[in-house]
Image 1 (spheres, rainbow, N blue to C red):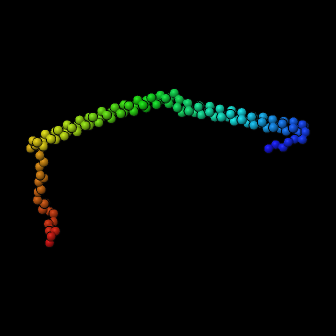
Image 2: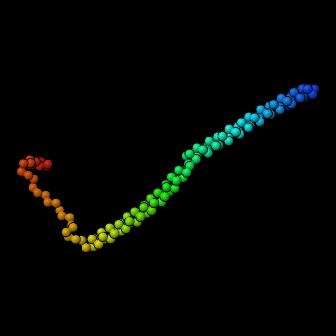
Image 3: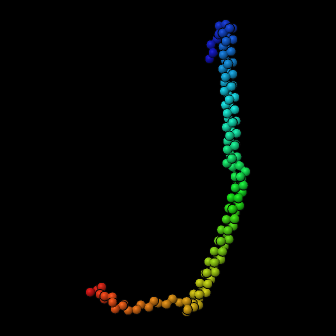
Amino acid sequence: MLEKPKDTIAMKAELLGAAADLATALAELAALKEFAAYQALEIAKLKHQLYGRSAERSSVLINQLELELGSAIATATTADLAAVEANAAASLARSANPDPSLARKKPVCGPLPEHLPRESAWS
C-alpha cells in the first residue's frame, strides 16, 4: 500500500510516477495486442496456403474419388456374391449328377527301372 505523502509536491511526484508506470503498461499492452494480431494474420495466411483454394479443389476430388471407390467396391462385392452363388449352384448340380469325363483318374504307378538298386527297408 502507498504511504501517505507529507506534502503536495511529493503527492504530485508520486502521481506522475504512477501515470508514467500506467503509460508504460498501456504501451506494452498495445504492443502485445499488435503482436497477437500479427500472429493471427500469419496463422490465417499459413492456413490459406495449406488449406486454400487448391486444397479445397483437392478435397473435392478426394471426396469424389472416395465415392467412386465405394461404389466400385460395392459393385465388386455384389459381383463376387453372384459368382459365389453361381459356383455353388454349379457345384450342387455337378454333385447331383457327376460327369464321368471330369472324374479324377488314379495315377498309374509303374515298376521301378532296372538300374535302380533294390533294397528292402525291413530287412
